Amino acid sequence: MHKQEFFDQISHDWDREHSTPEEYERTRVFAQHFGLSKGETVLDVGCGTGRLIPFIKDAVGEDGILVELDFSLEMLMIGCLKHQHDGLYFVQADAHHLCLRDNQFSTVICMAFFPHISDKAYALTEFRRILRPGGVLFVTHQMSREELNQFHKEVKGPVTKDLLPDEAGMRALFDDAGFKDLTIRDEPSLYIARAFA
Ligand SMILES: C[S@@+](CC[C@H](N)C(=O)[O-])C[C@H]1O[C@@H](n2cnc3c(N)ncnc32)[C@H](O)[C@@H]1O
Image (cartoon, rainbow, N blue to C red; front, side, top):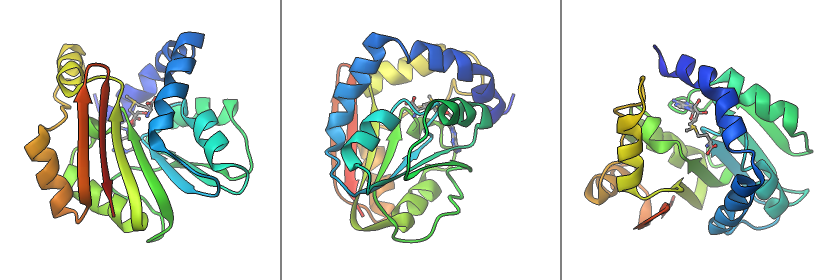
């Protein structure tokens, strides 16, 4: 099964699991790690059903722009039906080919998404291309790298080999794509890689 079909099929379950009051609160607290400010232009890539939308929109305010991008139409449709705001746009696209102009975004967020990218080196050059100089990229999970990789190995289907590279692998990928000042926090229930364009 192709990955896009896999994510289409799990979209309703994914949304249900992440819509409980406990998960909403956990995501609200987690989103504070992004340190967003009013007026920012943010890309949430591999956005799924848009569980970050309320927190990003709240942080960037009415003058901010949020683009929610995913290749799964089913995931996007759920998000699109739940959330409508000025300055909020939904785009169906593959993260390897963003169809977005250069130097437009101040922040790119990959939440629970990076391991699923088949050509990470190429996708990183795309993220860097659309970021303004000094813009920030986050690769985040609500699990440590070890917890996440174990979790994916146990999932049946086309994501079973979607693993997060080790720190040396991440450094090589980010360096080759031209990102600077990479920091990685990897602890129980938290993984945050942050780097600047
Ligand atoms: C595990 S879900 C995470 C969704 C969301 N970021 C969240 O935290 O709830 C991964 C998402 O990445 C999307 N995805 C996977 N590969 C993609 C690609 N190459 N381009 C765009 N989206 C992709 C899937 O459709 C899915 O919605």
